[in-house]
Length: 303
Length: 285
Image 1 (spheres, one colour):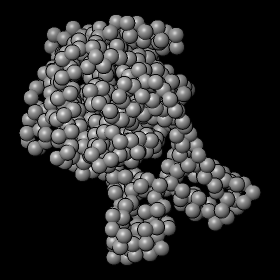
Image 2: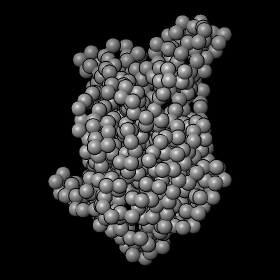
Image 3: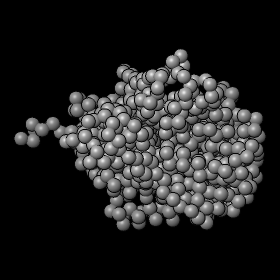
Image 4: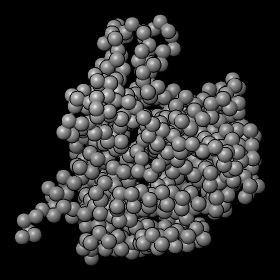
């Protein structure tokens, strides 16, 4: 009976709260270790996974989401009503008698200016929010994206990347989707976490890393997600490392491993390799152990 | 702010390059200065400053409230909402707070005047002094998605201050970063000389260029990768403001929440010089 039910792939998202803790280096290593995974780079604001995996892109699409207000200076009467009504302060009128200027980077596309313009001088156009790529890497298919500057719809673009990765996984029978998340706690992070099986948080033992870990764990709890933690650069501060360990055990969150500070991660990055492929890096074995634990949490078979 | 005071933002495409380190240490050597932590998703500056907390207040966005006695269920509000934040259930509109941008389009569209806008808390703004620093930061509530209105409130809270202002921006180039960097006199882009660092620096420099904000680059951990950060500055004609080599002692002091200018004497000079360079560049901007 169970055979009739299409089994959906397992999903893992790597996040960190604080930036620069090593999310992408670790996710890249998992890509090298996992079998049959689809990779999704959901750090659409600063996508970096492609720098390790050198994907060959076979499909590029413009991703549209939301609107941008465009003003027609010919019909505009410079009444200034839109300047007054825009809640996002995206419209300014440096010269009282000339048409106002809409700052496209700040416009959220709400349409209020269009709705209230007495001269019908403002139209709403579909906004290009970024590019979406389907690619192939040496470790399998990858979906990634590039958000335009000031991109309003980063959450929607993240969802689009994930949806595409899920489609590829289901169509071609991949059992796993590995998702690289973005720093912070806001819309792209929340979109990268929706409905995943496990969130892996890469923490660093600094007062700021610890502070941000607390907020990310609260976020996972808020959404009822299973989380586990990797402590990167653990030797930078053994005291904070042990504080993180106790905090995790108090909130019943597994610490899947600790990695010391090692410039091999930077060297591997410079060579365009994951740490697994980078020769003679003892930290690679630690990352292998972490992957075995995470695979166990995901309930997937790994040799 | 008087005419001589400058607003300097500190940003980076990639996270973890050293924005916070730069912001707090520059503030500590800058004399009387206002420091704004606008990384409202993960505010960290306060961990390095022993702030005497004073005023704390909620930051709000406007949110529609529907008077069910007046609402006829006509659906005009749903049509006006470009964020699909309103659905009509039965005969009544239901608004999803996580999709609502607080733009007021529904309020304007309602023919029955059944919608009023009420404040909804998205975070808090806290402030207080530390040494010569007037410190202000915003903290976004957990699960809340909209940072930009809170970032704007933090910047508004500094209005009227006479001193220079340093703004610690969130990482990336998306809407929260744009909001933090917007209308600043100069933007310091912090990077590290690695493929990830430079890739994200390019995006950040594109952002400041499109916004018309003059910018320069500080290369942090300048000896961990290769010379690509310096090459980037030369090729693009971007000012290289300074380079800070990797220092394990500095990383450890940072990890304990210490100011580098307090923990290690040599950084006092380094950050004072860097601050003077930034001011000079910003004045020429």
